[in-house]
Length: 234
Image 1 (cartoon, rainbow, N blue to C red):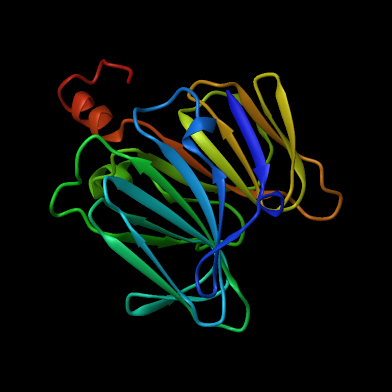
Image 2: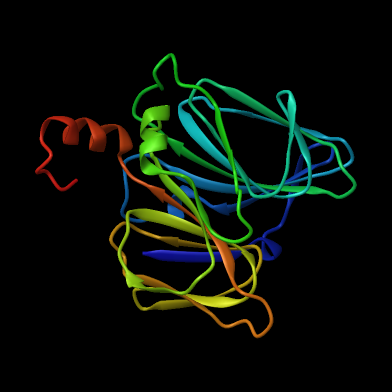
């Protein structure tokens, strides 16, 4: 199963003064993957507005696409990702010359995060490509469903992965999932279910494609199983 949409094709709803929400992926659009409901929302924040998100029965991974936001005691900017476990509340306050854009992914989880699980943050340190959060980092953080987050630019030959979403930041290209091909541009989201054969090709004539990929798996089970039986391919 696969699915694709562009943020420009989704009607927005003002959920707080100065905050527009667009839902890019709903649980009904999901296919094979871990148990639970996966959803992806896009938020536009402007005019000093505050966006507050509560994590009741789910965990959240946010990605700042552009703009400046005040988060906790610091400013965060584009190409920054924030993981927040269940039971936490996160707030972002717009503070900058231009509007801020944020993509927020949530996954419902089978039980609450452990009591020491904290919100974590990571920012792209290079200009083009980097793994923002590794599988091991998410596991140590206490994530249930989030597996790895990569910023990528190069073409990807056909391959299989865990359940994943790809959100496109810059450039133009084509993402193929099994028999389906999608033309992608900034603001495009593509979903591919676990084990689907997929590839990405840059078709832009001027700028190279750049996108971020999020993978999802039963992270809490995977590492605990491996700890006592390394021969299990899970």
